[in-house]
Every structure is written in C-alpha cells, then in structure tokens.
Image (tube, rainbow, N blue to C red; front, side, top):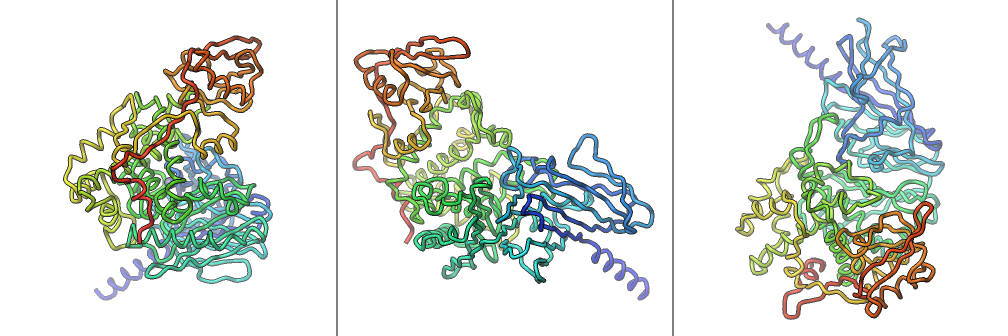
Amino acid sequence: MRLILALFLATLLSIQAEDYMTLHVDATDLTRGLLTSEMEIHTSDTEIVMWYPKWIPGIHGPRNPVENLGGVYFYSEKGEKLKWHRNSHEPFRFICKLDQDTKKVRIKLRYICNQPNGNSTGVDSYGNSQMGVINWNTVLLYPAWKNNQIKVRTKLTLPKGWKYASALQTKSQEKQTITFKTTTLEELIDCPLICGQYFRTVDLKVNNFPPHYLHLVAESSSDLNIPEKLIQKYRRCVQQAQKIFFKPHFREYHFLVFMSNRLPSMGLEHLSSSLNGIGEKDFFNAWSLKGWVGSLLPHEYVHSWCGKYRRPIGMHTPDYHSNKDTRLLWIYEGLTTYLGEVLAVRSGFLTPEEYIPRFTRKLNYLMKQTGRSWRPLEDTCVCTYTLRQRSKNWGVWRRGQDYYDEGLLLWLEIDTMIRHRSFGEKSLDDFCIQFFGKGNSGQALAFDLLEVYQILDNIVQYDWKNFIEGRIKEPKDKLPLNLVNLCGYRMIYTNKASRYLQELQRRRKYIDASDSLGILFSYDGQIRKIIPGMVGDQSGIAPGMQVTGINGQKFTVSNLENAIANSIVTGKIELLVFERYTYKILTLKYDGGAKYLHLERVPNSPDMLTKILRPVK
Ligand SMILES: [Zn+2]
C-alpha cells in the first residue's frame, strides 16, 4: 500500500513538474522590428494542437495579429524539424504529429513587429533602434489541452544596454537576459513590457496604498525630463483613485509609457499595469495634456478595477480562443470613461471650466448619431471590434464604439440620479465602494447585470433594471437629455463657438457647421460629415464632395464663415461643388446664421457637474 502511495505521489509530482511551458523571447533584433521566441512543452500524445492566442483582453476581439508570424517551426526532442499544418478552418490553430519518443516539443516563432492590424494596436509588439514594446501574446503558442492557468517560465534577452519595465517580477538577470518569476499564462499576457535605451522610472508613492511607478522610454534622453508639475498630477491621480476605490487588488502598479512619433499612440489596460503610447513631446504640450493624453493614464488606471478586476461575465473566459460576450462593454468602457475623465479633472489635468466645453462637444456628437434610431447602445457593444475603424462616410448612420461616450453619459446620469434621489446623501462613489470592493483574492471577479442592479438598488431604491434596459436595449430617435438638467445645466445655442471648439477646429483644420447646416467642412472645402435631416443633407451634398466656391466666391474658411453669418439676411447659401468631372451649384435654404451648442447653468439649481469634478479632500 505504501509503495502504491509512493508511486502515486511520484507520478503526481512528475505531472506537476511538467505542467508548465517555457518561453524564451530573443529581442536582440527588436531594433530592426523582429522578435524570435522559443518554447518547450511537455506532452504524452503523438499529436499536439497549439493555439496562437486569438481573443486578447483589452481589444475585445479575435484580432491578435496572426498575419504577422514570419516563421513557425516545431522540433522533436532529438532536434529534428517536424511537419505541422494549420487547421483549415482556423488560422490560429496549429497541429503537429510527433513520434512515439517525443515527450517534449520545441517550437520557434518569428514575429514581425510594427505592423498592427486595425484592432491590434494595443496588444502588438513594436521596436526601433531606441525602444521596444513586447506583448507576449504575439510571440507564443499555447497548448490546446490547457487553459490560461498553465504555468510559464519566461526569459527575455534584450538588446545591449537596454533597460525594461513590466509588472512581471524579475527573478534574476544575467547580462541582457532576464528570468522572470513563473507566472500563469494569464498573468504573462496581462503584463506587457517596455524597453529601451533611454529609460526612467519615477516613484509615485502615496501613503497607505501599494507602490506605484511611472516608467518612461523615450526616443531621446531629454524627453525623459518631464516637468515636476506633471509628476505631481500623476501622484494626485493615484491619491484621488484611492478615494474612489479604497481597496487595491494589486501588489504594485506600473504605468508603462513609451514616447515616440514612430510608434502608434495607444492605451491598453491591465490588472497591475497599463501600456500607454504617446507622441515624443506630448508630455510637454499643454493642449495634449488637457485632451486625450491627459485622460489616457487615468482611464487605463481605472480599468485596473473596472474591466480587469471586475470583469463582465461573458468576457471572463478561461482561454484565448473561446468567443467573448461583449454586451456589458457599456460598463467596462463606459463607466471607465466616466470615472477616468472625472479622475483626470480631479488630478488637475484640466479645470471643471475647461472640461465643460469638451463635455459639450461629446454630447453634441452623440446627439447627432442618427444611427441610434436603428442600433441600440448594446448593439455597439456586441459589434465592438467591427466598429473600431472609423466609418469614412456616413458614420452617423453606422455608429462607432459609442459605448465609451454614451456609456459615460449614462453613468453620469446614474450618478446624478443617485445624488438627487438621496438628497445629496449618496452618489456613485457608494456604488464604486460596493462594486469594486467585493472579494479579497486579487483574482478577476466576474459580474453580471443583476449584481449591478442590486447594488444600485441598495444605494437608492429605483427600478434601475427598467431604466437601464430602456437606455441600452432600445433604438431611439433622440439621445435622452435628462442628464443635462440633472447636472444643473441647460442647452443653449449662440453664434459663437467656445474657445475650446475654436482652437480644436484650428488644430484639426475643419469648420464645424453641424449645428447650423449639419455639415463639417475641411479647411480645403472637402465635406467631412453630413447630419441626416438637416439643411446640408436636404441639399443633396455627399461626404467626400469638394466645395470649391461659396456664394459666387472662392471657397475659403472666412468666406464660409461669412456666408453662414450673412444667411440671416440672404436666407440661403450657394455651394459650388466639384465631383469627378462636373461642377454643380447646390442651394442650402438656411437663414439661421452661425449656431453653436453650449451648456449654461440653470440659476438656483445645484451645479452637480462641478461638484462631481472637484477633487475629493
Ligand atoms: Zn478603455
């Protein structure tokens, strides 16, 4: 009996000992945009099936760039090259026959960096002579008979002199080869790495919270000298997040930032880190820091709680090939967009006064998404990755990934409803404490809509199910606008654009006549966008057409502005439009002059928006 037990234990131990794979990524050629990797996997079968990861968290789609593999090689234990083939219906699935003696298979991959597909920007790998970004999902195959909990022993060899940062824990380093502590496949893929010649780590330590670091890789050493004031804002961001979420579920948090004009701008969330790509000088540019760049790190940071720790049940899959149900992205991305923007203002990236015209523009954009009449918000979640690319023409009918900004509006509305219904006693902060404070394990926790309804109902009793389902599941002719009033504001139109919109138009070289004519013009007269049902649409003009003249004069920005302003007197605007070989005159019957949406305070009502945006003491 004792012998049998000993044999059983020995077998168990040997199984456990082999229940892992090794991965060695050679990044010495990353300077030329190439990565190679080598894996070892134990098997007792005579055929192995391996997956190239397909659905990568964060991009919400089956778009890991399998098309960029530049070499796949299988070897037997004796070192002989083995034949493999791909599943004829599934380009991510590799099959290889083994001989009886092979118990350990070696696989080599070569990956071509710097050419993301329309969806893979945030999960791809990049490299140039100065810096690199490694997403492990691009350089590995995993056994089909295992899930994402298989253990991986990972090594990485970097170009000479390069430094690196990642949420992975380093076990040892010998010259340029780093050995990381063993992780699960899930943890590995969730921990991208940045590396480069010009590298800096800033400690963002705050009291009573785990260590936080801001890691920078840049194209030149001078770009690493970011202003001290900016560092203070990121430290404040961590402090303010602490006041929203209270409970961390990570051991450490790493903001990974690469600053380059040669690599794409991007952001991608992870549990203990975020990967952020910005332009070389963005951290020195006040305009960028009040816009996308300023809200980038707060947004990805919020995701550590919203999306990574608390994950929609249909997206909490045990591997990288099962399909995901993305219907709850209006929470995953919508609540994150809301909290991320609130956090950016509370951290001091912009003032509430600077935020309001930016918010107004979002609201105006969504008001004009006429596709809402056939496509409810939830459908934009289901179709998430198919909507990643902007529709060049008639995007208002197709809609985009509207669950980000329309999700933001919905959560702002929920926040203000809680505040009003509880007479100022409660807010969305109470929801955040209960929702994100659940559990203790540090492992991702799945949620469903029922849990969301229950927590909201605990805070303020209301028919949240009916309210939310009405917002997300039903097509609508108009964007619900109750939230404007709930925030303490009303919508007005004036003949002058906000200073923010004026500056935006100047920088992006377009004229926004969407509130007057229902048209967006490029500075050169190209039609960028038409709003269905408005006067431009009724004139028969189409996206992409070229306006060459206006009211008998050459098309220029000032002639267009004058024509719109003078329409009060003339009652019409004539556009000379060129299309292919012909010119034609289109007459817009319009007498409203210049028109721009603004939000104005309703006197003697509480200013909820500013109250929400104020830093928490
Ligand atoms: Zn996001």
